[in-house]
Every structure is written in structure tokens, then in C-alpha cells.
Image (tube, rainbow, N blue to C red; front, side, top):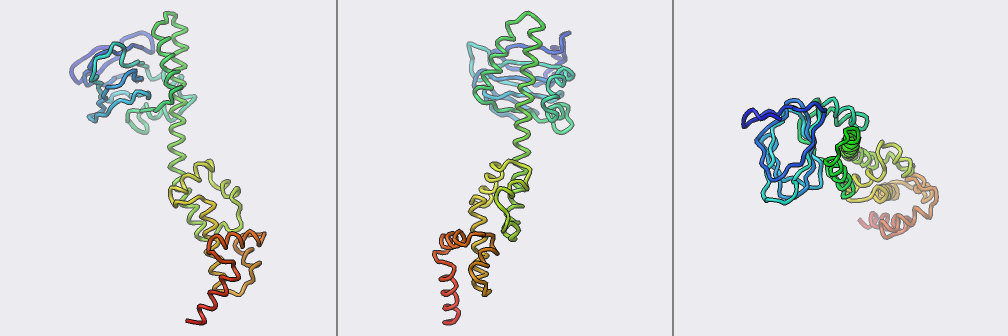
Length: 286
């Protein structure tokens, strides 16, 4: 790499499409990469990353990816007797070759078509240990074919992790709007005769994610919220119509009257018949 000045543009200086090294007890100049991407994995705590003028502590159990032409530097607050970072520099074409199959979104991010932020990918302990083991093996290999295979494994694993994160973000974001839509439809009595299983099929996300988003929105599970809305509607029917209990049970989506009566009693503390009598007596006395 060639440093031009303090605000340096590092350029690729090897015939290989990638370069690897361990970074130890060092402070980098504020620099960017003119023609390649950088990937690094922290090996110790106590590192700080400055990225386009914003500083943040480096989380050790993460992978960091930096697009071209983004100024950054890394500082180390304590001296260590082992490497602080595993660093991998990759030319874009080589990077795309091993990541595009697993994550088109990662390719778009790194080329700047969508954004230019530093990518920070949290890792599980197993994922982190796997990548560190690959980096250790890579640093001591001489055979170029074997080195390339390990680079392929690292890039593929990172791309899959990014795609999982992107999917989760997209699904979580969508879940919030789907939960709001579901609440509105329940409030408007659109799902009185629809089973919970059929409701799940109406939204293109997993039912677990939908349930979680709905509970965060309303404070209740979907099932409890639906039952409460049905019972509120049943109260209105008991107050304002002369429908018999069987008809009201069917109107609010219960084929088995006993199930309706049990849920109504849990909701109001009264059976439907007693609730109607008390409401009627109260109106007469008023």
C-alpha cells in the first residue's frame, strides 16, 4: 500500500486480487481505499474506529466491511502482545465473485448503489470462532490455491451473514406495518370468522415475527386481542339487539356456543344471559 499524505488514499500494490495481514499495536492515518474493499475482524478489545468523522468503539465479535473512498482510521488504547485485527483487502471483482451468489444486497452496498456506511455484522460465538480459525490458517499457508479457497470461505460466510441480517431487518420493518394492518382489521371486525392459522397465511412473514411485532404494538398476543374484540362486539349485540345467544355466538365467530360462553364469562365475569339481564335492568332503572 502507498501512503500519499495524512488524508491518504491507499492503492492496491500486489498482483494478487487480495491481501491479508495482522495489524498489531498501531495507529493508522486517516485514509481511504482508492480501488479496493477492506474487511477486518477485531481480535482484542480497546479499539476505536473513526469513520467519515464519527468515532465508535469496535465490537470484538463482529466483522467490519469498508467500501471504497470512505475515510477511516483505527486506534488502539492498550498495548497487546498479540495481533489486534485480522485484515483482508479485496479487489471489487474478486469480492463480487464470492459474495454475489449469497447476497446481492451486499454487492449493492459495497458498490455504493444503496449506501456508503461501514457494514458491521454481529457474529455468534461459533461464527466468530470459525472466521478466526480460517484467518489463523490463512496467515500460515504458502500454497496459493489453498489460500484462495480459505478467502472464498471467509467471503462466502460474511455474505451469508449479511444476507441474514438484511432479511431480518427487512422482515422486522415489514412486521411493524403488518402488525398495524392486522390490528386495524381486527378492530374493524374483518376476521371474526377467520382462524388464526388463516390469518398468519395472509402476511408474507413468519408467524413468530408477526406475533412478536403485534405484541410490541398492542401489549397483547394476537389471539387475546382478537378474543377481547369479539367479546366487546358480543356485548354490543347483547345490549342493542334481541338476537339469542346462539346467534350472537355465531355472529362473533364461534361454532360452539359453550366456547363463546366460557370466553365471554372470562372477559366480563358474567354469562351472556346474565350480562343482558343486568344491562336491561339497569336501563329500566335509569
